[in-house]
Image (cartoon, rainbow, N blue to C red):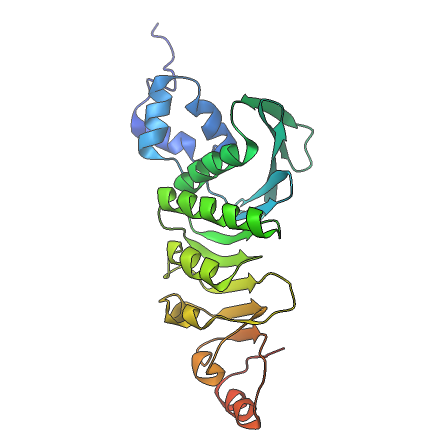
Length: 263
């Protein structure tokens, strides 16, 4: 009687089918088991199949929420926290409503480096289109600047990000103009941008020149303004921004070309 085939020995078409039922965490664990599976995963990059990705940076940790949705519309959430510990970092993982919290120590690597390494791998394995990606760095000038620079490098390594909705918080206009080009302009439909929350309204006219702008359906610019509002938002279903001043003529034009609302 011949032995039952192992996962490694199975044809790639079979492995491709089986990997469709694995979460990103399962894929990461298999990546560490042997050279054959590591090579298969590296080359074939099975789909992580996440619907939403949320990243929040605090003063001493980075938190990630990954959400999936099955065919019946049921959602499931995975939580990761990268935090500093002596000699390296600590990574905590958990699944929503399940008592399966795990911790792992990584020596010789700080928590930020560990996060961006894992985040880059996750993006490489996210083949399906995301519904939403939200990124919020801590609102500290030095940490925020370092965070966005590292995020750009992660985007460069992973390739074009395909997401219908993009939420970026604690960004400057230059941040936005350097980050949005990494998103697939044919997929993105909604963006929400929040500035430094310092009471200042800064111009964001450069965003109109990006090819993404014409494909957008909804735009929220908090702490930002754009010029020639009536002309530039005619194609949008929803629009919200801060603006230093509006003339009566501006209001009249906006009323006639769009149902947009401005705060």
